[in-house]
Structures are given as C-alpha cells and as structure tokens.
Image 1: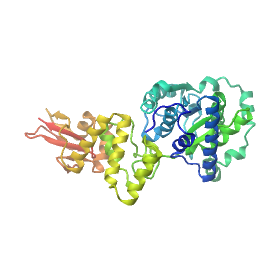
Image 2: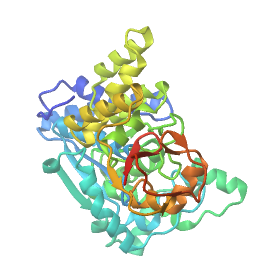
Image 3: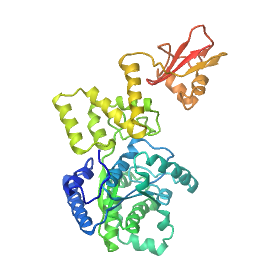
Image 4: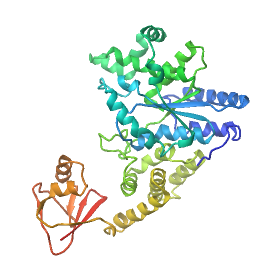
Length: 416
C-alpha cells in the first residue's frame, strides 16, 4: 500500500511502476510511449517543485456505483498518495450529451435534474477511495456552459469526420446503417476541452476512453499551445463471472454500498482466473505485492481459495473496515465452508398467513415482486434447506422456527 508522500521523495521509476500498473492501450508501443512521457513529466515537475495536475471525469448517469467504477478512482488515489494534485471532475455538462464510447447505439439523453440528483451521491461514494481533504471537486459546466457556437466551431476545426468514423463503435454502426447522431461527436470535443480548461498533466480513464483522452484531449491541448496530457488508461474490471465487464444490469456487479457479508461472498464467487486483475485494479496492493501473489498462484505455493479470501478481505476493508472484513470472513466460513447457518441471522415473527413473495419484500430480501418471482423460478429461494418453486406459496405461524434463504448469503429465521 502506498502512503502519502512528497512527489520528490519517491524515486521516479518507482512512481512510474505504481502509476502504470493495470494500464492498457491496445498495443505495447503506446504503453511504452505513455510510460516514457509520464517519466519525463514527473522529472519536469520535480525540477519545478510542483505536483502533477491529474484528473478523471465522471458522468453521474446512475446514483450508485459498483467496484468497476472505482478502478480509475483507485488510480487517482495512487497519484494522491504520491503527492500529486487530483481533481474529481463531475461531468455536469458532458452528461447532457452522453458518452458513446462503449455503446453500439445512441445513449438516452439525461435531464439536468437527473444529473444533479445522481451527482450528489457520487462524491460521498468516491471518498471511500479518495482522500477527502486532498480532492478537488469541480463540474465541467463551469467552462462548457460559457462556450459560444463560434468557440465550438474553433474546437471542432481540429478534427475530421474520418477520425470519428474510425472509432470502433461508430464504424460498426455506420457499416450496419444504424444512425450516428451529430451530437454524439460533441462528447469527445467537450471532454477534450476539459483538459484544456484545467491545463492538466495527466488524465485517467478506462480503455474505452482511448480516443477521447489519447487522441482528442492531447490534440486539442497542442492546438491550444499546451503540453499534451499523459493518458493513464486502466483495464476494465470484469464482473463476478470473470469475463464480461462489470455491470449491474447484467447482474455481475459488486456494489460499493453492498453489505460486508454480501460483498465478501460476491468476491469469493469470482473465478480463480480473474484474481490477478482484481488485485491489480481493485486493491491497494503495489506492483511487487501483486507479482508475489501471481508467482505463488503459478507455482502452487498458495491455494487459490486462501488467495481469494485475502482478496475478499481487502475489498471489504476498502469500502467498509478491517473489522467488517474479518467479521464477513467469519460469516463466510461458517455458512459456506462449514455449511452451518449463521448465528446472527435476523428473526421475523409471523403472526398471520402471508404470501412468500410479499414476505420476501417485507424482509428486504428482494427489491421488487418481479425479482422475487425471478429468484423463485430460478431456484434461488429455499425454506428449511428445500428449494421453493411455488410462486403462490403462503407461510403461516408454525410451532418450530423455520429458515428462509435467498441466494447464498441472505437468511431470515421465521418464528411464531
């Protein structure tokens, strides 16, 4: 784990190794170029006695975040711990357009009210990773709202239509004859202007931001007589399936607001093959620590189960606490490894006959009736260890307590 320090104290090669960990650019030559530019900019900043100006932009498209959203925040925290200046930029204006980078169709436009409501929760969640006292919070509406049509034309004259059509998602849509709306090209221009407005040294983003950061941002900075920013592009974290990008809509996400037991259990469900990228992207581990884990897994000196438990402890500790992580591990061992029911399961007193679906909602074990029906149909609900398949099942007070289970981690004891 890194600790906060003056950027001049840690050797530059060590800083580069930490900051380039978990990055990807599609080809090794570009990665070597960015590492070399980062090294040069760090040396320059050291000579000038100043920190690097670093930022990452976040469009508040949804009110809550999952671990995949925090990968770039983890990179920002590394810059903070090395003594550099970090800006958490809320895309109050870019959100109005919508980022087409990872979409094969037009993203629905958001209203200003939706953006403001979501943005209110973003910063509090971000501070589970970032140092609150060292983070600058800005909104890109500060400068984008003041641009005139002439300003936009002058920005746009630095780019060609062919550059945008060469982007994979646009190219696929163009080939299929699907619409590409003109406003979608504005997004890269607006994000590029963010870098110009803040005169940044480094922009952090996911690999899906390669065009916006590495091409548009750097090109516009040069056109505006600024030094081009270094692009730090992080790999995309797979979900609990270990393959597909983490997404709540797909159902493979680990929410950063998940309860410790649930979070720990979800991490333990990822395949062994995904552990290295989780250690690189989602933990506080330094490159040499990650290398040791990879070596131990490769030579068999550590059992994958034990390594995964270490990973689960680390992730729960990041978003909750060390004590919560230890308690979650004890719960997991009790429930899953020893196949015992948890001692601390909540108790609910049944006083009258009630439908199973209504009860699941009342206990907060599901978020909706439709989720309850889906879980029952998929065999995800058990009563006293037996799978329930009857959607119309009704429960009534019984002489002996009964145990209701949803999925692998949610339990309730039903008493009369």
